[in-house]
Image 1: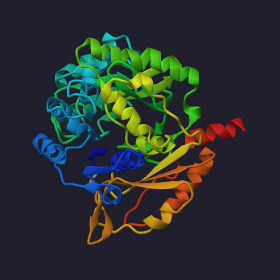
Image 2: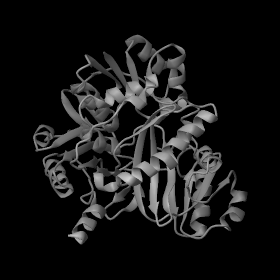
Image 3: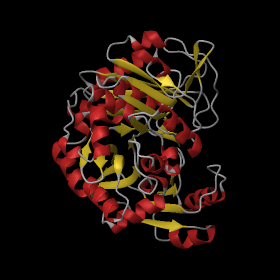
Image 4: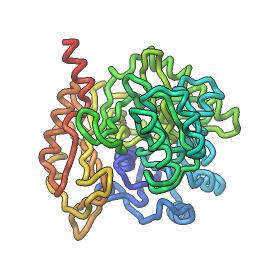
Amino acid sequence: MKVLVIGGGGREHALVWAIARSPRVQEVVCAPGNGGIAALARCVPVNQQDLDDLIRVVVSEQPDLTVVGPEVPLSLGLVDELTRRGMRVFGPTRRAAMLETSKVFAKEFMQRHHLPTAHYAVCGSAEELPAALAHFHAPIVVKADGLAAGKGVVICQSKQEAEAVAKQMLTGQLLGEAQHQVVLEEFLAGDEISWLVFSDGAHVLPLVAAQDHKRIGEGDTGLNTGGMGAYSTDTLLAPEMRDWLVHHIAQPVIDGMAAEGAPFRGVLYCGLMMTARGPMLLEFNTRFGDPETEAILPRLHDGALLQAMEAAVDGTLDQVQLQWRGEPAVTVIAASQGYPGAAQTGHEITGLEEAAQTEGVTVFHAGTALHDGKIVTAGGRVLAVTAIAETLQSACDQAYAALDKIHFDGIYFRRDIAHRALKKSKEKA
């Protein structure tokens, strides 16, 4: 069969890599792809912000299955348009994707369906902020309502800071685009978990959990990013907790969306905070997380990803069981100088072949391009280096050994991915 993957980042490289490993797949096409994806799939140009151009590519290619990677095509209604044309597509409709595209919709949905989440308030103007902030204690989380590439959440240490940040979001000063609404939210303390489930609109099938590292600096300091690394290990969620999450969070979400006339088909990302009060929902994404995907998919047995995606499209997810490798996986992001602000691009990347030869390592390309036969940097997050090994420490060591072989001007990566889990394991020992 022929599969078309929409997108061109590290997540899409991991998706292409996993899909191509299925014996049923004859061809993988990626639009637009990147310098690394081009080694596994035929890459075709597309404007991911333009619905007509996206439809043009899919109609031209006539794939047996289209997989939508990023959030913007979902928000444009690509799944709706392809479904209307009778084409098989993995991903939620525009309305179902509102769980991600609108933080206000997501919080109100959680409240309607009695899902555990932080207390919140919604403000649509600067004038509403003082009265709303009176109900909160610092620190306070301020969230942009719309899509912000993982950078629309700010933890504020005082009410004054929260008011200033919210005003900057409402005016467009902070994110470059004015938000119609912002969400004020109580700060939750605990371990943050990225937990994804497949859904066919009625059934859910969980994936293994991961933990993302959002901050740019080591020790979880500095600005929020799209993610500087992640790890996935069986120790993140006990089987009993996973079952609880299925019955008390994932299934109620899917049932709730169906009841509201927007059945959710695709993959649902639940951002969880494991607090002293129990698991609490922070947010939803309506597609695979990045960089969590690069840490999760290498643990999945070959061919299983395509099987689960097709079952989600066909409504037969209850007939699928996923087989996972028990070894932990670690992903470290190599970023360009300046990220998460304006990043330097166009620098040649060397050492990729040597890095890929490191035991247990796969190098996924995020922001790269082919230029005159050379791989060059083409974005803020450039590479996702993933290692899978017998222990978490070994996986970290192998990922960093591979990274030490890669060079480009301005390369930056955190050297403490999985530091909290490694500290806990040392304390137990």
